[in-house]
Image (cartoon, rainbow, N blue to C red):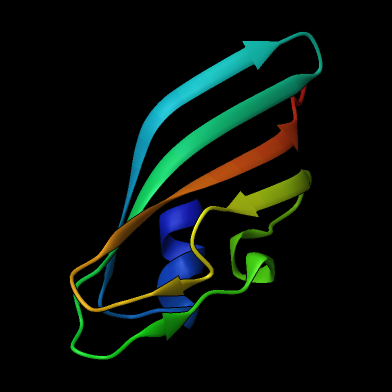
Length: 79
């Protein structure tokens, strides 16, 4: 699960799936990541990677306390 994987790197965050897009062979997911902590977070796209992930885009690479950003994950669909 992407949220569990992210919590290993960013405790004190909320990671919510907003939308899922599917096509033959690909799955795209749009998440909202919120920093619930009191310090800024420097986000790294590798934190969102897991098996099958082809690419990650993060709108705001630095997330201030109580701020949110969108995270887009593209992965291969498994048969």
